[in-house]
Length: 45
Image (cartoon, rainbow, N blue to C red; front, side, top):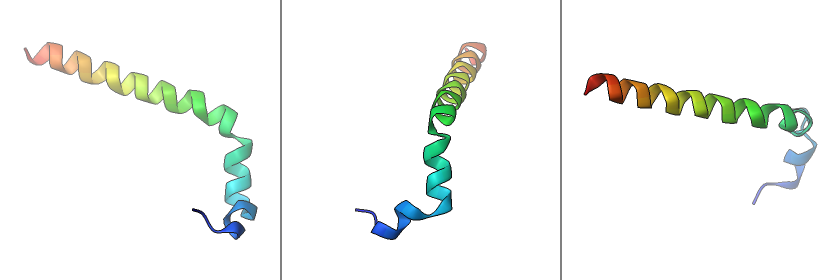
């Protein structure tokens, strides 16, 4: 459980505000990472 004061920190507000932007970015990075790993595994066979 997070302490109450953390909800009012500028960082948390910023994180919340840009969540809609960051979520697709994180998914994109994970997708690219997965793709690179897959290609590397195929290439190493």
